[in-house]
Length: 130
Image 1 (tube, rainbow, N blue to C red):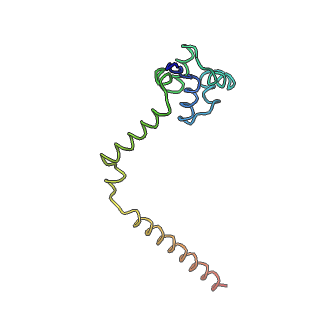
Image 2 (tube, one colour):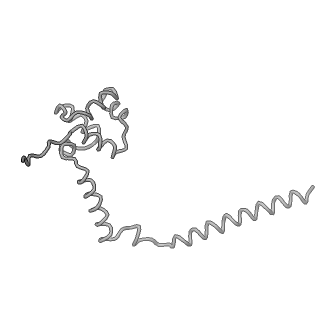
Image 3 (cartoon, rainbow, N blue to C red):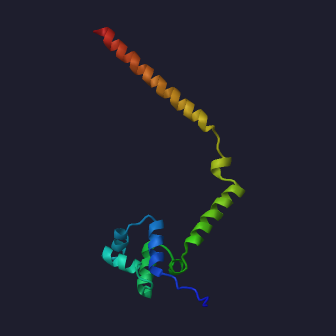
């Protein structure tokens, strides 16, 4: 029984990073000066030429190492640690709020009601004027 690990699928890593950056294959193709079909071929390839990998990394604004070492688990851990850090250190959203959001909702509602009352008054004046 072998414990050798399967080599990383570089094309799949490129695809996942592109998707995380909300970039379409067409946009990456345009940045690389190649066709969308060629991007698809790259993303389906287990290995990618080093020079092409450098170009793709530059187009995706990541390092070559980020592409080579990318893992979904790493992304999940990154976002979990980011969330944990906000919870433990506090965030501007939770601690620096200088107003009650419900007060703002009530204020908006009152302004909308007043605007409707003004419209009704205006329409009544128009009707009475005839």
